[in-house]
Length: 264
Image 1 (cartoon, rainbow, N blue to C red):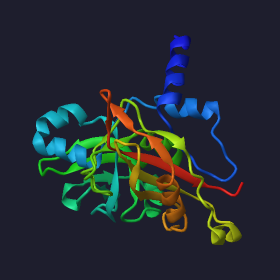
Image 2: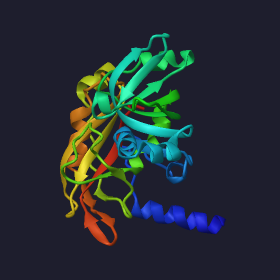
Image 3: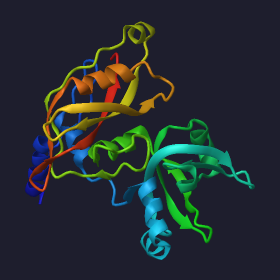
Image 4: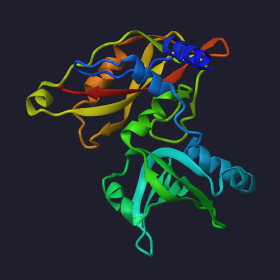
């Protein structure tokens, strides 16, 4: 069993690539092993896909999800409190098609740190009601470390996917794009002088020919720190790749790349 597991990890090392760009930092073998291990059996789905399943057949969706803990990801559309002072956020492509996530009082501080337009991953228990509202109760915002174990392994199929909307369909390709050359991002001089560090999640479109065609920032830490956006996108656009493969054929995919800017 251990031999098979080691072989599986070895195959993933050469067929899939997780890129963390940084100043004076590399990923060791243990980092890769931990990254590619299955972290949880909890179902992971975008807010848009969850809404669509309920819209098509609420009975079938309830049988599949109701009272089960799942992880839902998407863009924050609204932040507020209900009539009994319970904090909530709505994530999804459009507010009326979003997922309403309710938090306990102990998580108020984490909700207070969010902003509209921010990309988040939420763990919670699914509820639905007769009005068609899909609710995640006892919600919890995943940490950056937990998020990294989910998002970077996902790709988006289709050139016309709308960034920041749940029309994007996240799937796992048979073989994800492989870096032939990783361009190191330029550390902004103003950030270096000020001692500013941060992390940027970039998605880059890798074509069937392996060439990057466009890139977008979907999340940054801290959220208001935009100084690293351009060097992060330049780095992924100036890198070279082998294309993703699905059923033996090259496909167009969005590749999620977390890029860390560190002075240490």
